[in-house]
Image 1 (spheres, helix red, strand yellow):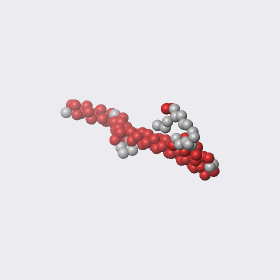
Image 2 (image 1 turned 30 degrees about the vertical axis):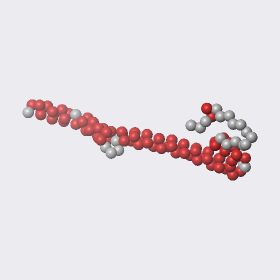
Image 3 (image 1 turned 120 degrees about the horizontal axis):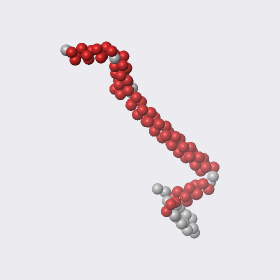
Image 4 (image 1 turned 120 degrees about the vertical axis):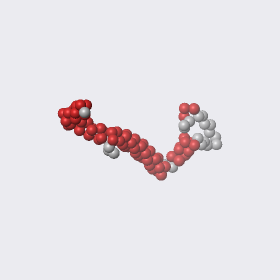
Length: 102
């Protein structure tokens, strides 16, 4: 009984500290909107923003190339030569290993 009285006295003396500690524990780790979940969501948002930037740049590049093809008649030939390694009948092509697409 003596231990129970000591425990009760400790709780009464430090009730605000215990309450704040429980609040921090619940909000920080156990709650649905805990700090750990918020950090995970922040990382996911950052990753998705990086993907958005990548695809936006890719879209802009493809749009630029499409406009270039629509305007320049020699662009189709140049792209066929560069990308698909096509050549004219009287040409020789030299391909370096570092120039090959990966």
